[in-house]
Amino acid sequence: MSHDCEDCGQEFETLSRLRLHDCPADEPAENDDSEKSETSASDRNVAERQSDEVTIKQLDELLASIHDGELSAIHQAMAMYETQLRSAHESGEPDRYRSISRAYREQLITVLDEATQTEGWEFLEEFLDAYHPETADEFPHVTTILQNVTSRYLIRTRLSDGVEAIPVEALGFFSSILTRLDGSGYDFITEGMHPYGWGIGHPEHSVADNIHDYASTSIPIVNAILEHAFYADQRSAIELLEQIVEDESIQEIMRHPSGEISETRYLLDAPAGVVADFTPTIPRYWEWQEELDYEFELADDVEQRIRKLVRQKRIDDDLPSNWEIADLTV
Figure 1 (cartoon, rainbow, N blue to C red):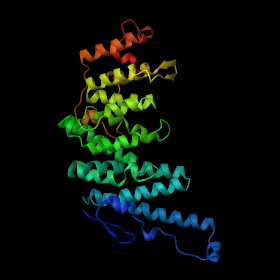
Figure 2: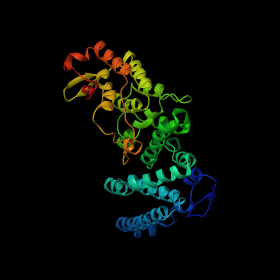
Figure 3: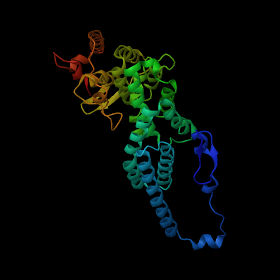
Figure 4: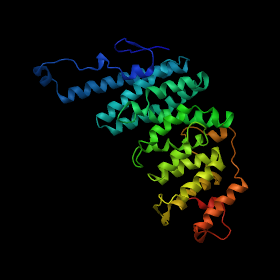
């Protein structure tokens, strides 16, 4: 499927080439010094605002076209959304950035997810290639949208066809993000990493190794990914938890409202969260347990391995005498 630039008319074979080409329409017009001096900053701001309003109107029209069945409009809508957020970010306008994101993020997630279910993995993969983290110095602003839709694809595929059916490129997309996170900042992108755990046990991509390696960077992020790994494959997840706990190079004291706790105590929140009465909120805007009719039941042997960890690390000293796995939540 070819893609045309609406500004300069050039045609490209892939969405990646369209996104990354140097469009002549983006180049500033040549003005002499006298013309520049005549244009005040306020005039430029007004012009930019008017341009934004036109673009937002176009984005609304594209979304309407998508709802009418014109799936090709999703490419244009995503490009406009990315451009608007990048403009707000570069202009130092956080309120404008949040306003655009709140207005369109869920809508774009919904239409891209529906299109992926209709058209298949290849449709989504083209967006992952075009807005891959490795295509720019900073994360593309559509990253959270792609994380969300890819997460839905991971979960649906794992539960319906098994881990082997998950495209390795989907897991590679998540791992390329993980390697660029230093444990702080990028809150929405960080939370979007949680469903990466659904890929645990994949024969061509070692999610477990990557999570283990990242444990020395951020225990909280690993804990959240590990929780999703328990949903996917509790025996692989408990094995990974044991490996991290026994890794002497990973020792960290975590701050908690109740006081300081060890990294082991913190990570035990992962299986506890799965059995507790919490409804997963990631991926956002999707009640996957209800849609997929999913229920988790902790296996007896896995529970015993968790209890063994608790005893070995003397964590039970701070627990009730008749404690349950759900009591390990932090």
